Length: 91
Image (tube, rainbow, N blue to C red; front, side, top):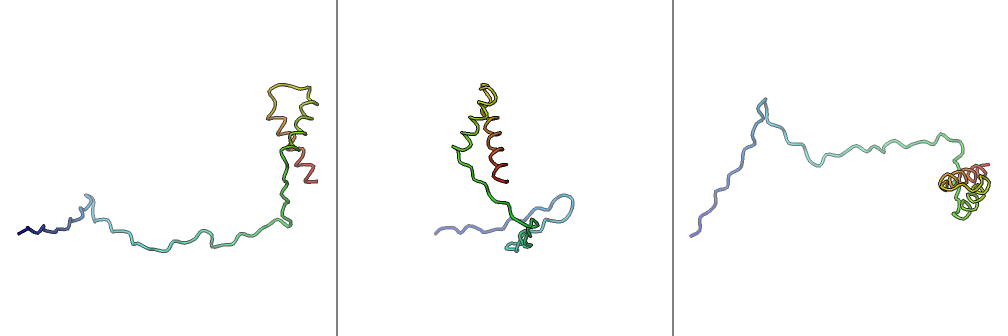
């Protein structure tokens, strides 16, 4: 005959300074941070300006020519061209 294993529960050890820690309750509902609806304070929403790669590239090329064709300023020229096009689109 096979012997049955004794089933014993391990006791939780108490911390040295006092009482044993209480287990946290499970399935507690969390408060949502989205409970309050955000209100838009702008009277008019801003329009989204979509610029194509070709538009920016053409303007960046013009900026590059205007500056005298300096080398190594590609990103700077691109940024200037994009900013100028956005300013024109905003009015």
